[in-house]
Length: 499
Ligand code: BES
Ligand code: MN
Ligand code: ZN
Image (cartoon, rainbow, N blue to C red; front, side):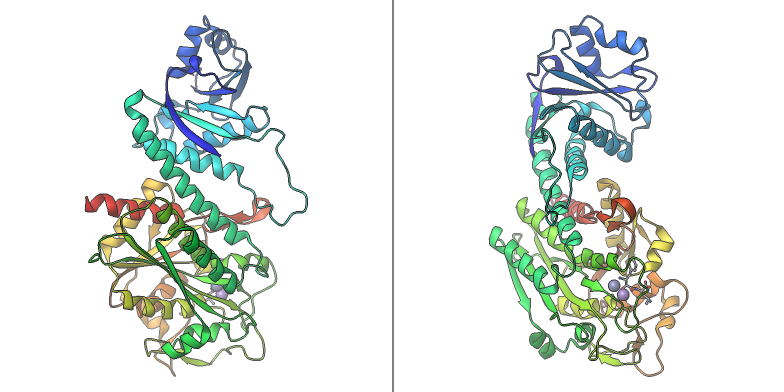
């Protein structure tokens, strides 16, 4: 999709369609008033006759409106003007795209940017329009032999800005929106890719491809024998039952100051989680292909950061394995030794995410990180606690947690903090090893984070449990690309704070 910005009145746009907001109780927006005036009250007449109320979801497509240079004017009901929040703004964009798709217009000038969204500026509105449009148009049809082609596909969106003074910042917002959207797109594709294709080797190849596209990203891949040498007995115990070899991927993007300690993202990359010998029940087991969505978000965000050429040091680390049962698989009761030296009693082979993350978190120490943030579809309990709206957030450093909470608010890709209190640690006591890999009944998301906290004592660390937000189930089953938006915003906020 092509995106640009432009200033100027709506009736002067020589284009297939101009999109204009109308608010509830038949209230005209500024651009609607301008078109109304140019067309001798055509819009206000229609509104008076009740052709459109302005409620959220109302649309009215008009052709050949007098004294306009566009072929069509699409009026979109936005609901009460004062009530428009992040979610509503997203919905309005979605309605725009769906209506345009069946209209035949391929190029559009959107005046939805004049809508007031609580606490958000024009940059935010442009950036989020792009994310919403791309999200609405996304489909994963690479593996369908017949693709649903739109009759006349949308090709171009022009966002209206307020005067020439806003053009530069508008263009910057377009660049940012497109880069974030590309990262989200990439994360979605990786997530949706079936597990017979998207294996640990596939993820490694994707990360290597990324470093070919962006010279600033340096990718390296550790093989099982390398990990054995490093003593990653915990990570390796998970892939033992699989024919697919484990990989540990590192993507270094060091475009900041040499002295500046890097931000490290660690993404869980279980390309299929059968549960192992502690086999999962059959229902919806296919969805465990999404157990690499943490990894996908890390690869996606590295792409976004490189695309934006941000002057910062960021490292992405992806431990990736397939969790399968077979004769060589780890058994419940096995005790393994992690890279940190701590021994772990594997009481449930389905609590595998923490087993691969702990070694990756120890490995991260060697980069002397400023902060480490891991992203993982770690616990079903997180879905029970928080549902599908925020990711779970746990941290050993409150300023870092606050930065992530705030980046979530800004981006709309939210997280919510749970307590990482020492009180929960004893649930991980083992009779035979230093620590057990499950914490029993109660607070499953917290005990999983407690497990990880044993391996993150040397730096500031936060954990995002994305089990509830990484993909949707049901008829619109598919990866969401979250939390690429949140992570990018966190990095952008860090850059802003360093100014
Ligand atoms: N990948 C799962 C967590 C998961 C389950 C995410 C369902 C999204 C939907 C993870 O590896 C897992 O199996 N966790 C177990 C932990 C338990 C054995 C302590 C869980 O949540 O049941
Ligand atoms: Mn599991
Ligand atoms: Zn898992």
